[in-house]
Image (cartoon, rainbow, N blue to C red; front, side, top):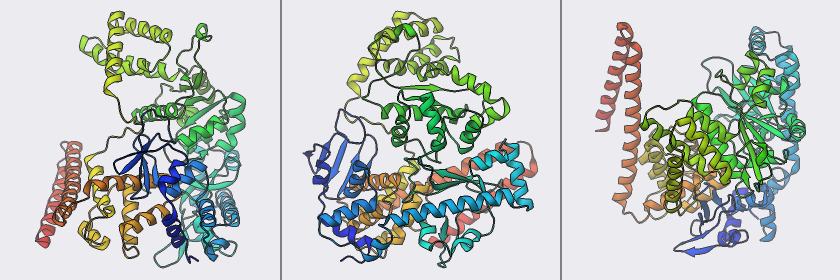
Length: 627
């Protein structure tokens, strides 16, 4: 019998064949050392889903999904980690560790975590409403200025986490075990093996699942220099941010009644909207929208009418475009997206998979600001007149009113991809006519450009159908390359030796920092790369984003196979140099910006010069120490 869950997972993976596991869901064909098939996680016509039997992983080069055999079972069967482990252990005749049977694998643990979260909600809420200290009074004034009344605080159970390091823990440690409070994300274990509160000196926004149970928290900073601005609960046994939407529990009846949902960006956007009568508003919980979010919403709105309501600045426009693309991908294959509002075309053969509209008031405010400053009724008017996504995108491109032939050509190039999305020929011809009139160009010329571009795209864009279209910076690529060397299996260096070579190289991406930190902790507990990969997947079993990153790093590591020791070390050094060079360039850019902002202020310019001199001196000292 295995003594720990890690030992049991290792025993199970030794008996699992990932090709057999995936073949239960996907038809695979061998090509070289990999197997390929159509991805089960998104619609595609060309196989982009790869299985690597040697490393025991799968990866889709279209949508980015990746993981090991256990995570594949979890995702395709919608099961929790311990549920899958228990089933596989039974199948292979393996016994569960005794401590797991009593705690981690039991329903009681989840129930206790939910109970702890509920107690935390009561604790934080009472603190905000009853405490008379100057700090609490100041927070109440801040909320009042944002239009958050006592009634709203009570309805949404808003609270306040005190500054004290362990007030919640000390109050409830006799009611809950340390394990329950830590796994519920309410406490953190320090290096001294002591527990402190996770949330301190923050406004608390409790998060409910669709059944109304409190499972997580969003926590907003109170002080201006407090970082991060929002601290959110991590994924846990009772909370998966990729599958849960803030406000859904209080919005689902309105979503069903209105047959529509308003998708916003922040917690306070939703609170303000719902409190002022826009009751079908929801938001993601401090993460990007996912396909699982869209699937969840589609259960409540049969027509799948989704309003996007983000900030009207550049960042908000990008969020609108990004989320619209994800929604369209999620409904791919179910029919056309509604692309025309004229009633005389309602009898066409189109079957709408969804209807996407954009609420974009011209004042340049986020929904919360707009509702507070202009009013909920005005917001509802914009909602009633919200254009379809296609109209919004075309109007955004045309609003600059190009005059010269060059500018018109540039505008047409931006619009053509939108026209190509329209499947209905009548609707497309109406848009072409409207755009040609707006730009004062020949309609037949625009038709020819659309056809020419469509013909080019059909021949040029063959192969892997990518959903994930991410521009990776030089810095991010170098950081990923550097981390991937830990996962190369055919070299003569230990994990400890690689870690020493990398040293204190600065990583900037939070996800990669998390991976690096985890690898460092595992340095002395693993004997080979296979064990390291297994441990990483087990540690991040409930974090899909981390599993995708790990899979991507494994995929990158294949680039560095079959290198001799000198070349392997050279790869490490080259990527360290790239990272350092990027940081130096960023420092230079910051200094240039400071100089620009200083203008003619001699004192500020002198301060910047002194900072620059100190940086140069420190760098020279480091270089001498390394000689």
